[in-house]
Length: 201
Image 1 (spheres, one colour):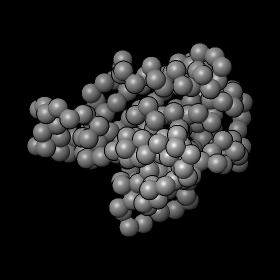
Image 2 (image 1 turned 90 degrees about the vertical axis):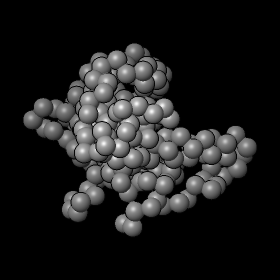
Image 3 (image 1 turned 135 degrees about the vertical axis):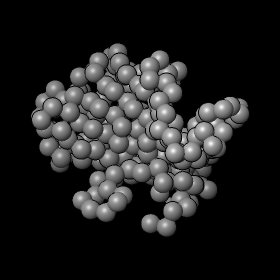
C-alpha cells in the first residue's frame, strides 16, 4: 500500500501545489495483501463478494507514506489513510485525494507527472477517454512490475483525485526486490521484469 500511495502522490507533493496537511489515501486490497496467516477474514467464503473496511484509521503503513513524502517535500506531510479488503486475490488500488493551492489544468498535471516519471520504466500514466480501463486497474497489472497512475480534476472542489494500481506480489514485493537487486549490482534495472501481465489487453 505504501508503494501505491507514494507513487501516486510523489510528483504532486514535490510540485508544492497542494495543501500538505490535507491528503487522503483510500485503499482497496486483495486477499494476498493480508499476509500469510490464516484467519476467518481470509477464508474464501468470508472474503468472497466483500468490500470490508478493516483499518479505517491508524494503519501502520501511514508512517512510511508520510516519511517518504516528507523527505521529498522537505517539510512535514500528513496523510489520512483507510484500507478495505475487496474480492480479488492480488492487487491494490489507491484513490488519493489532494486539494490544490492553485488552479491546474489537465495539461499541467500531465506535465508534472511526465517530468517526474520520465526515466522510470515501470511507472505508466493511464488516463484514457473511453473503454473500461480508462484509469489504473489492478486486474490488468497482475503478474507485472508496473504501477499505473492516473488522475481526474474536481474543479468544483479544487481537488485532484489520483488513482494508482499495482500487483502487490510483484511491484509491491518481489518485482521491486528484483529491480533493487539489478540497480545494486549495476545491471539493467529492467532485467527479468518485462512481463506485461496476465490480462490480455
